[in-house]
Image 1 (cartoon, one colour):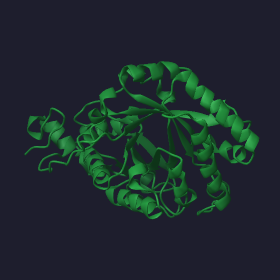
Image 2 (tube, rainbow, N blue to C red):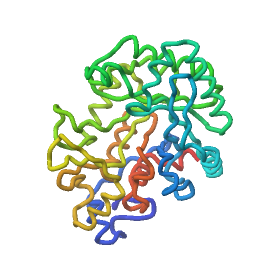
Image 3 (spheres, rainbow, N blue to C red):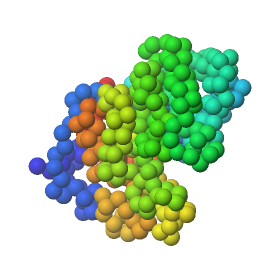
Length: 350
């Protein structure tokens, strides 16, 4: 039986599409009949080029807006989020929920360190965050704490027991302050370098724990030159967090809509490329898309997205997240979200 593509089959695709997708001979995937979140991250800095009305609303269940940022004085930095209310209203008109992501990589989450040292500052931050979420109609909050003294200041891996516990305490305080049914989630990494900072106690205060299962290769000495989120690495990431005590039914697992290029085949310099751009390049160069590689660029593919979604389904995990929605390809035949929907349909949550 040919693989269904939400209205397309391999036999119905053009020759170019078959080349791009590599769908010949693929097995029919098992499909979830339960409602599982399909979360699409939406970066507000792409608002002008990708306004909300252009998003593929039928391919995801939740939109996670990135990002607001904590400030050391307890305020919430919302620069760039001027259209937040309009985005939320559009999402609600489509029957979708919207989560506000707070924090991010590097300096984006550094202020969490100072906020959580001072009970008064933490309380002020939570009050400001709760007020902003209520005023703009958000359905949830995601805490993305990625800055740690060990890793970011001391270039040292592992767990800082004092700092990691402060994230747990922040999540507990947020859960107590934010009214139900407001969603509360927290982002975690896998791997002993930074993954050890995230304690399984986080799940006691979160509706979802979002595993960022990508960026496992890059511009550092010990990194291999290869795919940053292939299926083998993805499985290892799932094993890592479950072995640390995170329960599958709380885990929403992320995958990347971008590729990493090792410039000149070396790991001293890497560049990121949107998946949608790589589709165009693969087509022009007549490279099969599901190869997941062009020269020194390694990237996600529809075949890989389906395999990851299938693994999430088999392991009884909560759902899936794509970072990020504007980097996906709009055409259903090439879209990563469409590939995910073949296994975990967003329509099941309608």
